[in-house]
Amino acid sequence: MKTKNNMQETVTIERQALTDLKKVKEEFDTIVESIELMQDKEFMESYKKAKEQIKKRDFDDWNAL
Image 1 (tube, rainbow, N blue to C red):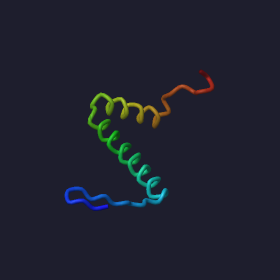
Image 2 (image 1 turned 30 degrees about the horizontal axis):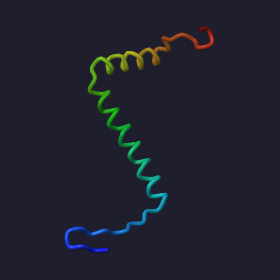
Image 3 (image 1 turned 45 degrees about the vertical axis):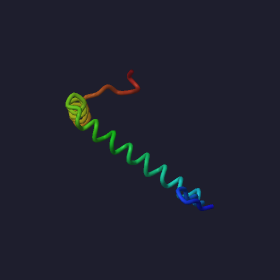
């Protein structure tokens, strides 16, 4: 139905396209969250320390806890 100031159209979208868009949004959100964490100096220092501890195997055995 067309009117002078308002045009209505029907658009058909396949379910898979919506599923794909949801997946892309989730991936985008993950990237944004990673960027935000990388800007947090305190977090990055802790992250680097944890990576070094793992590399040096400086951690408790889970079974010993």
